Image 1 (cartoon, one colour):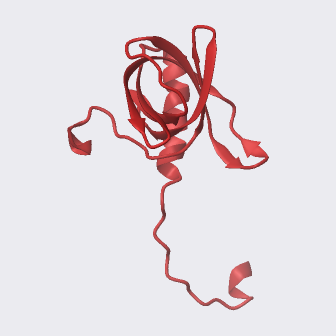
Image 2 (image 1 turned 90 degrees about the vertical axis):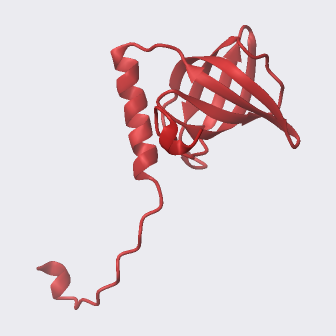
Length: 130
């Protein structure tokens, strides 16, 4: 299925992730996020078809990060990749407020993509204060 065939656009972004399944916690990083779910790299295998709570955090630098966005999800696939595992999650139905927060999260990811550099225009010091 190509990106254009998908119901929701995906945003390739590496956010910190905490996954809770029953009484166990796993940490990892998202590889992409969409309105419908996410894919993540983690260090342990997890079972397909189980429910999980995922908390995503945007990391801006070592000391600055967003508040966690906690989502209820179901694991739909888990595949061995190199030294770890890549896991696919589909988000469970959400209340309107949660949809709003996820939309803001995704909007940030959309806005943080690569920007085309604008041509540099030489300006005098006087021009900068007009």
